[in-house]
Length: 505
Image 1 (cartoon, rainbow, N blue to C red):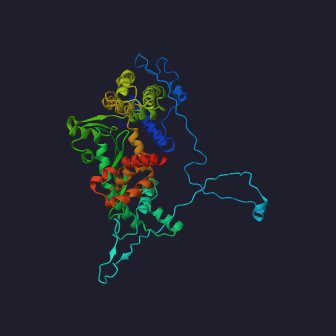
Image 2 (image 1 turned 90 degrees about the vertical axis):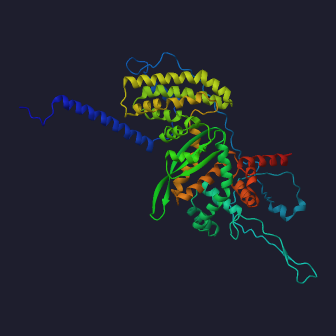
Image 3 (image 1 turned 180 degrees about the vertical axis):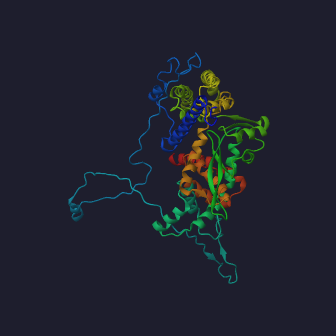
């Protein structure tokens, strides 16, 4: 009788084939992880690279031809010329030094000046601390020995009986949330370079003070961002210190961005759909553009028909970009069509097209490209050419799952084609957390969200965040809540522009 412990040849071959498939999938995962860690992060493809991917695409048996119609091709939009930075910017103050020859100094009456040679160099003076002293003289009326002395009231301050002035508070905020310097580094810089001792614990308390004063401005920006009916949302993980254990837990900084508007950050200790209930107002009606994370879908279903979810084509394209090493020809075919879509968007952006024109151009050009892509995806899924767990199989499944949301931007000219703008707004926080690593506590996340929102609003309008914060910290103690709308970065920038125009006139 045959020994049952030894498999037959058919079972052995089937097991070998299964292990080979598993080995191929694991190799794809390892290669993708290695490219993510050690490879370049840019996903740009030049035409020559696309041509290499697409070589032999039309050969029989190599790759499927999804449809017969040809996708519209958009001409490449030329980039605007970049002006060179002037060697000596005209707006800088000039410190002039006149060097007279020694013979002329000895007998100036024997010499006549006939001209001059001018040379300029760009110099820099480091920042400095100063003591701002407020003197309030006391007066008493002459002839009245028992009269009450008269003294001017002390101007309102951010924090009474504290050494911190608006300029110092603005400097610490900008250094941490704009220049990404942790407080312990600032502590060292101020002591070693200026001999001023500012403990990091004191500066941390001042950060909480700054956030409390700026919170009304933050709430005003938040209401403006969420009142437009269209917002892009994304989240990024940030660790925070758990009190009493010396360990960190994972929290999330949620970002809401209004295209051509402001960005507002929200701090939550989780990534659940319930966090969106705290971020998005109950009366919000409109479109939320996001990636394929399931929490958004759960949140939108809970709000009924009030919210429409728009997808992100960049996330879909990224999956095919990651699969181009394992399936170069098919991935190249998809990437070429994605490139056509983005070239059209670049043309519309360069011409500053409004919502109506964007809607018309997308209906006539982008829709046909997307229909062709969808037919190709359905065909590849039907013939089961790629394993579901392979990189190309995952790219196809992700695209089909997100397809209804990807078509939403065709119906509304206000919408963007992807979520890249909100991802770009998150980048400053990603740079910062590489330096300070984590928040000191969960409550510090909310304070950081407020300060990041103000700094980002300044950056978007090209204004100096230090000048803005110093002015706002000076004016806030004497203002009411009704005046908050007059000192937002948007209004402040317009006021500075009008002041500069009047000065020039």
